[in-house]
Structures are given as structure tokens and as C-alpha cells.
Amino acid sequence: MTKNVKTSIMDDTKTDQRRAIVLREAFSAFTHYGFKRTTMDDIARAAGISRPALYLVYRNKADIFRACMLSMMDEMRARVAACFAGDADVVRKVEQALDEGILRPHREISATTHGAEIFDTSHEFAADLFLAWMQTMEEEIARGLQAEAQAGRITFVSGLSPATVASLMLDAVEGMKSRNSDMDLVAEKIRHLVCLMIGPLIR
Image (tube, rainbow, N blue to C red; front, side, top):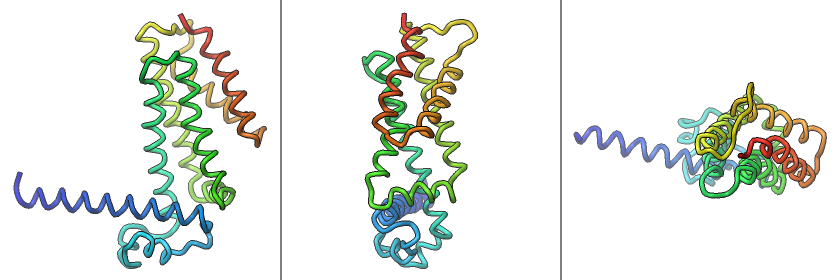
């Protein structure tokens, strides 16, 4: 490896680290003070960089907010995928996946001082990322169900596929969320849903 290549890799690593710090501090500021009240100066100061340096990485608050959502989506993908590892029964695995992908993020944001504003900001600046979030969940759950089928733990009846089951399940969960503001009630309904949809597939 040449010196120039090593230098380039080190620079990329530093940039990634700087971005991670900015996103962490920015999201903390958004949840503590609200998106509207948080300024680029606030974010730069919390991240330990200058305001001009921050603008070299992100154009504005909305750009940073979207980057925060993308980072959270990457973390969510890993957590949902991890739910299908181990020896738990498939019903429990799917319940955990739905909790990690939908209930946990909702609970964590709702528990912050400005959770309601964060949800509103998501609709305003990152509505497309919500669709991407659900698509990511659907893909990971379908992949997990496929692995369970290949391991001989579940069997899909004619006309059904892992992707179809995952899609139907997420559509149902979104309907539950739109009709119920109580996430504990949604969690209970999700448990019943998973039993109804996954239970009959178990060998």
C-alpha cells in the first residue's frame, strides 16, 4: 500500500468519525431543544468543530436531520437482522424484529423532550426515508423468514413467500399504529398478529 493510499484512507476515516460525532450531537440537540430552536452554531459547538467546517460536511439542519435518520436506519437494519440469529423460536424472532424496527425507535423518540417535534420534522423533511425505513424492515424480515424456511423451521404454503408475508405484516402494523396512539396496545396487537401469521407456518 502506497503512502498516498494510506493517507487517503486515514482522511476518509477521520471524515467518517467527524460525521458520526456531528450526527450524534445534532440528534441530541434536536431531542433536547427541538429542531426549530437548534442552530448550526449549536451543532458545530457541540461537535467541537467550527461553523464553516460544519458547512463543508452538511448544507443545513434539514440535511443533518436526514443524515441522522439514515444513520438510525443503518443501525436498525443491523438490529433487525440480529433478531433472526440464535435459537429462539421463529415467532419470538419476528416479534423482536418488529419491536426493534418499529416500537423501539418510537418509544425512544417519544421519551425525549421534543419527541413530537421530531416526528413532525420527519414528516416534513424525511417522508421518503420513512418509506425507505419500512422497505428496509421488510427486506430484513423477509430475509430472516427465508433463512428460517431453509433451516426447516417453517414452511410457506402455495402462493406465499417470505417477501409477501413480511409485506402483509408491516402493512398491518402500520394500520395498527395509525389507529392507536398507545404503543403498549400496539405491541400487544403485534404479538397476536405474529402468532396468527407465523404460527401456522411452523413445522
